[in-house]
Length: 95
Image (cartoon, rainbow, N blue to C red; front, top):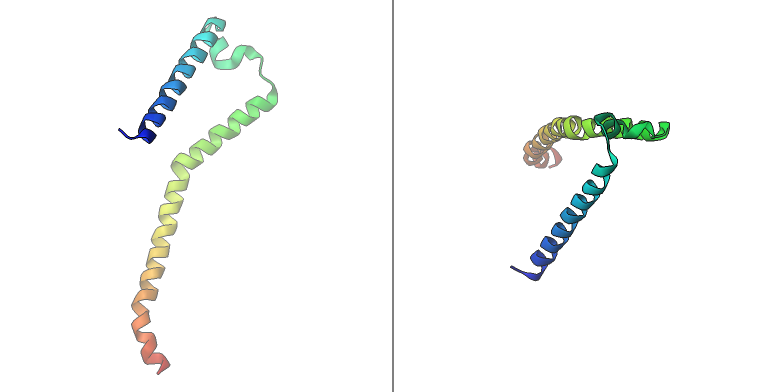
Protein backbone atom coordinates (compact mmCIF):
# COMPACT_ATOMS: atom_id res chain seq x y z
CA UNK A 1 0.00 0.00 0.00
CA UNK A 2 1.16 3.47 -0.78
CA UNK A 3 1.34 6.30 1.73
CA UNK A 4 -1.74 7.97 0.29
CA UNK A 5 -3.82 4.81 0.68
CA UNK A 6 -2.77 4.47 4.32
CA UNK A 7 -3.73 8.10 5.03
CA UNK A 8 -7.13 7.59 3.39
CA UNK A 9 -7.75 4.42 5.41
CA UNK A 10 -6.78 6.18 8.65
CA UNK A 11 -9.13 9.07 7.86
CA UNK A 12 -11.95 6.62 7.06
CA UNK A 13 -11.47 4.66 10.29
CA UNK A 14 -11.35 7.90 12.29
CA UNK A 15 -14.55 9.13 10.62
CA UNK A 16 -16.29 5.80 11.24
CA UNK A 17 -15.25 5.81 14.91
CA UNK A 18 -16.51 9.38 15.37
CA UNK A 19 -19.88 8.48 13.81
CA UNK A 20 -20.22 5.52 16.17
CA UNK A 21 -19.36 7.69 19.18
CA UNK A 22 -21.83 10.41 18.16
CA UNK A 23 -24.52 7.77 17.55
CA UNK A 24 -23.93 6.16 20.95
CA UNK A 25 -24.06 9.51 22.78
CA UNK A 26 -27.30 10.62 21.15
CA UNK A 27 -28.86 7.16 21.39
CA UNK A 28 -28.85 7.57 25.17
CA UNK A 29 -30.66 10.93 24.86
CA UNK A 30 -33.47 9.42 22.75
CA UNK A 31 -36.32 7.80 24.69
CA UNK A 32 -38.90 6.96 21.99
CA UNK A 33 -39.34 6.73 18.24
CA UNK A 34 -41.15 10.09 18.26
CA UNK A 35 -38.12 11.56 19.97
CA UNK A 36 -35.92 10.10 17.25
CA UNK A 37 -37.97 11.05 14.18
CA UNK A 38 -39.14 14.50 15.30
CA UNK A 39 -36.15 15.54 17.35
CA UNK A 40 -38.27 15.73 20.49
CA UNK A 41 -40.39 18.42 18.76
CA UNK A 42 -37.67 20.88 19.63
CA UNK A 43 -36.81 21.95 16.08
CA UNK A 44 -37.70 25.39 14.74
CA UNK A 45 -39.70 26.02 11.58
CA UNK A 46 -36.64 26.97 9.56
CA UNK A 47 -35.04 23.61 10.34
CA UNK A 48 -38.13 21.81 9.01
CA UNK A 49 -38.10 24.05 5.92
CA UNK A 50 -34.43 23.29 5.26
CA UNK A 51 -35.10 19.59 5.72
CA UNK A 52 -38.00 19.67 3.27
CA UNK A 53 -35.91 21.57 0.73
CA UNK A 54 -33.01 19.15 1.14
CA UNK A 55 -35.34 16.21 0.57
CA UNK A 56 -36.74 17.89 -2.54
CA UNK A 57 -33.29 18.61 -3.94
CA UNK A 58 -32.13 15.10 -3.14
CA UNK A 59 -34.92 13.60 -5.21
CA UNK A 60 -34.18 15.93 -8.11
CA UNK A 61 -30.44 15.33 -8.02
CA UNK A 62 -30.70 11.55 -7.74
CA UNK A 63 -33.55 10.92 -10.17
CA UNK A 64 -34.34 13.96 -12.32
CA UNK A 65 -30.95 15.40 -13.13
CA UNK A 66 -29.39 12.23 -14.60
CA UNK A 67 -32.38 11.86 -16.90
CA UNK A 68 -32.18 15.50 -17.95
CA UNK A 69 -28.46 15.22 -18.65
CA UNK A 70 -28.99 11.99 -20.59
CA UNK A 71 -31.66 13.67 -22.70
CA UNK A 72 -29.50 16.75 -23.28
CA UNK A 73 -26.44 14.71 -24.21
CA UNK A 74 -28.43 12.64 -26.67
CA UNK A 75 -29.56 15.87 -28.34
CA UNK A 76 -26.01 17.23 -28.35
CA UNK A 77 -24.68 14.01 -29.80
CA UNK A 78 -27.24 14.15 -32.61
CA UNK A 79 -26.25 17.75 -33.34
CA UNK A 80 -22.57 16.84 -33.24
CA UNK A 81 -23.14 13.95 -35.64
CA UNK A 82 -25.01 16.23 -38.02
CA UNK A 83 -22.20 18.77 -37.98
CA UNK A 84 -19.46 16.18 -38.34
CA UNK A 85 -21.27 14.55 -41.26
CA UNK A 86 -21.67 17.87 -43.05
CA UNK A 87 -18.05 19.05 -42.66
CA UNK A 88 -16.75 17.13 -45.72
CA UNK A 89 -19.39 18.84 -47.86
CA UNK A 90 -18.41 22.33 -46.69
CA UNK A 91 -15.33 22.14 -48.86
CA UNK A 92 -17.52 21.57 -51.93
CA UNK A 93 -19.71 24.54 -51.03
CA UNK A 94 -16.84 26.95 -50.34
CA UNK A 95 -14.81 26.18 -53.48
